[in-house]
Length: 180
Image 1 (cartoon, helix red, strand yellow):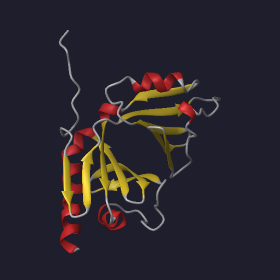
Image 2 (cartoon, one colour):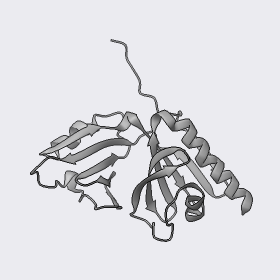
Image 3 (tube, rainbow, N blue to C red):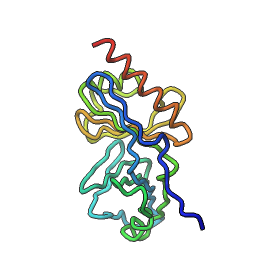
Image 4 (tube, rainbow, N blue to C red):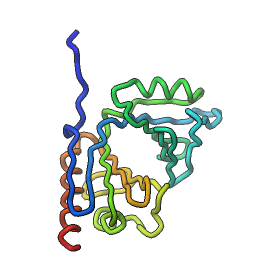
């Protein structure tokens, strides 16, 4: 068997426009977790699973709600591991599916996140503060938007649309920089 090396969608791109930075989060592992009928809601790795429209994080892990009894679980710097298998061991009675290679995560950091969001997505930026997460449309793509902190936003989209998503984010950042 050939020794294969995993590749991230865009080679770990980084861009800076004004005070905002855009980074491909190449090390992020992602797995979906769904409750089976009659199963108790788990607390994987001690992480309490959030309710609708919310996310939570702690100790290199994060979770955001994707639907009734369903969440995405993120693990920092574990993209090259079998994170889904590890998660399944900590979530008895749940269905766990590996998602890392199906998604791309772009992190945006810096001041001006609400103004940038207003250009990109149909979300009430005043109500979408740190700890919020939702699925929405960005241009022609379906994405998850996660407000990790006051000046930090994550956008998860389909890996097959990584180039288009990067272009949309970077263009909006460039235009915002021109206005300030």
